[in-house]
Picture 1 (cartoon, one colour):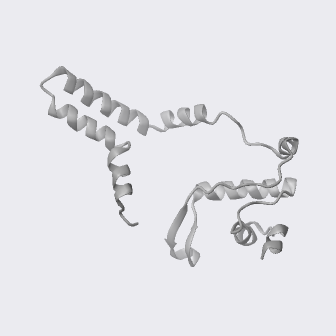
Picture 2: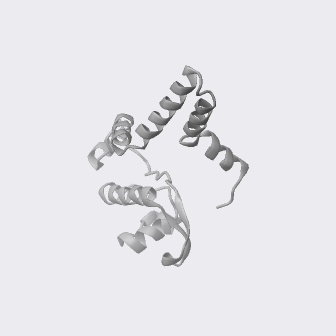
Picture 3: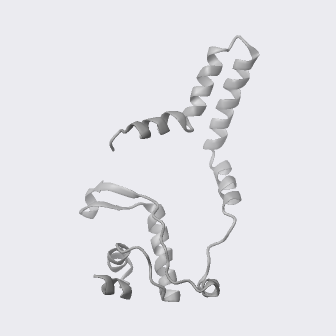
Length: 147
């Protein structure tokens, strides 16, 4: 991975590093009550946000809507399935390819394949066809029209 200035700033200014910076600032003011409180709170937040229980509770609160099923999708009369990418893994030797999808993208593609089977709607991801042929044994009919 190339270390760019924006990547460096994200790594330094966003959590969890920002919480460590706050703890260090609190330590520099440790003789005052404010420093002790700042250090303690930042470390407590860091520990709490690292716990799987807290992460699952936050994820449940943020995921307000369940995944749509095929019969619910027909109600909206959509024209295509759009798969939002979730990331990739680069330089993976075991796949004999320069990159492959990560777990999050794989789950999205598999769900899109299920919806494709259930609804017959075309998908927006052109590279999805090669993945689905390789791993799901499913060919997308619309892909042949574009190539």
